[in-house]
Image (cartoon, rainbow, N blue to C red; front, side, top):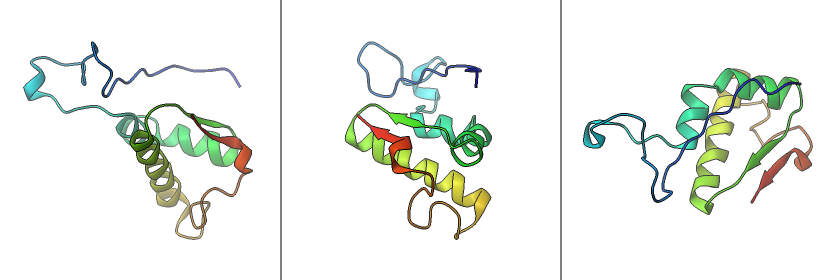
Length: 99
């Protein structure tokens, strides 16, 4: 599979804005889990469930927990409560990585 695009999202990295619009106080903070839910939920479902792809999560513990929850919500919203999120993912656990 060829990579289609890369979405860079900075949440708390110093020197980088929390959002892409100005002035900052009028903008919503953009986090990785927001991008997953709002922009690429269909691709997340396709890659993780249908194509048995891999998920690499690099960042702080709180961010990783938020990403995990977002992925679970995406999958359960499409596959129902008896889908992959009932006990986590049904694809092999070596397809999910946290760093």
